[in-house]
Amino acid sequence: MTKKIILGTRGSELARAQARLVEKAIQAARPDTGIETRVIATQGDKARLLEPQAGRKGLFTAEIERALVARDIDLAVHSAKDLPSEMNPDAEIAAVLPRAPVDDVLVSKHPRGFASLPHGAVVATGSVRRKRQLLWKRADLKVIDLRGNVPTRLRKLANNDWEAILLAYAGLERLGLSPALGEISFNGSQFFVEILPREIFLPAGGQGIIAIQVRVNDQSTKAITDLVNDRETLLCLRAEREFLRLLQGDCNCPVGVLATINNETMKLRGQLFGDGSAAPQEAEVEGMSYDGEPLALRLLNVFPA
Image (cartoon, rainbow, N blue to C red):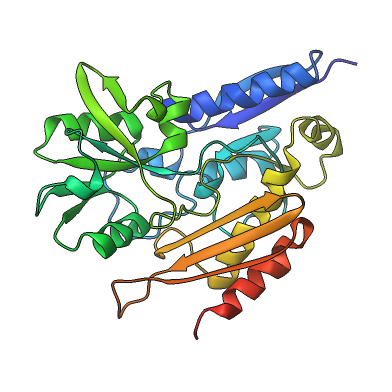
C-alpha cells in the first residue's frame, strides 16, 4: 500500500539540497512512497545575530525535532553535526546517508594555500574548534567570527578585506561547488580551495553526515528509513556523538572527533583543546565496529583529567 510521509527540513539552500538527497534515496528504495517536504524555520534561522560565545547546538534543529514529536512531520533531516548530544527522548536518529568527505577546506582569494597565507592575514570562521586549530599552527593569523549559511559566508568573503574563510567540504559539494577542483566560482567571484589535513583539522563530530530522525515508536517510517541507512556511517556517528556526550562537548567546546571503519575495525580519534595551551591533547583507540559507545568511553579515559 502506498505510504505518504512528510519530511521536515530547514529552509537554507544547503538544508534543502540535503532533504532532496534523502527524498531521492527513499524514492529509489521505495518508489511507492509519496514524500512531501515541509520547511520549518528554526531559532538559528530567525536570529539576526548570534553571540560568538553563546551555545549554538540545537538552534538549527530544535523546532524541527518538536514538529516531529508533535506528528506534524514524519521524519526530520539534519546536518548531524548540528544535533546536540542529548536529544528529545521521543526521537531518534534512525538512519543516515553514506558519509560525504569529512574534511575542512580553506576558501581563499589567493592560490597558495594555508601555509602561505600572509603574516597577520584575516581568516574568518564561526567554529571555535577551527579557530583553535588555525591558531595552533599559525598564531600570527587574525581569526574573526563568521556567521550565516554557506552562500552568505562566501558573499562576506568576496565583500570584505579578508584572506580566507573555513568551510566544510561536504557543504560546498552538496551545493555543487566541488572543492576537489581546487577552485570555485560564486556570484562572479573566483576563490581557491585547499583541502586541509585531518591530522591538524580533525572534524567536528558528525561532520559530513546527513541524519534522518524519526519518532521512537514510528515503526512504519523506520521500516522505510532502514532501506536507505548506511550501517557503517551510523556506527561512526554513534561513537562520535557518545564521545561528545561524555565530554559534554557541544558546539562551543573546541573538540574534534572522527570514527572510521576498516574491515569491521573502528578507529576513534579525538582532539581536545584546553584553556592553558595552544596545542591540543590528542588520542586514538580502536576496537570492533559495533563497540562505538564503549570505544568513546575508552577514548575519553585516555585524555588527562
